[in-house]
Length: 212
Ligand SMILES: [Zn+2]
Image (tube, rainbow, N blue to C red; front, side, top):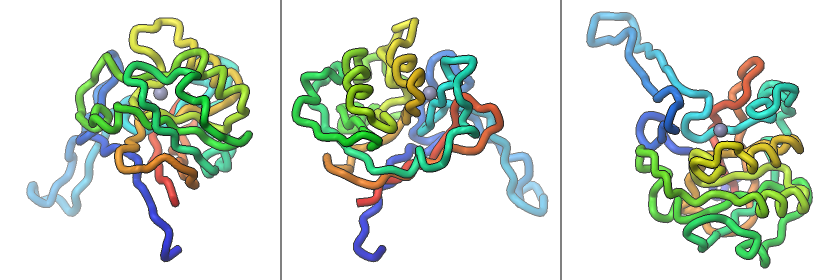
């Protein structure tokens, strides 16, 4: 793997990560420390299952949907197309006209959420770039295996019925949220984004990596 280039597209929890409004904020506290005379350093973490870089499973929006521990691992090791979207508001089908993605491949949207640093600023920003319903339909038509975006949610903020989540998760397509694509050029990569194996989980944090 000598010539391979790796991109860690995960955000750091507690540093760059964003608490989605209403979700349990990320917190880490030391329960044992050398400083206090303990035998080791040991911490405790409190967080939403959707904090930082994470995957949504169908169970997130469908009671009968697959849970994160039931999804086969191969769904999280796949070829991925990184698309640089210039639209500063939303990802529209018109922005995808020249995109080539094969059935089963992942598509990852790089937007100003990454290039302007919104994804790593640690503070929620309502005006993030999101995926529209029509673009979700486009993804379904292409038969993509996973959809990723560079913000903590793929859905337009304040869109109560979550149509984009529903469209994708209904077809069993995992959604990878909270990736930072700032330093990743548009192109084709291998994506690794294995979620934590949380029993009956509707979502889970991941370490997401692209290999050139
Ligand atoms: Zn989520």
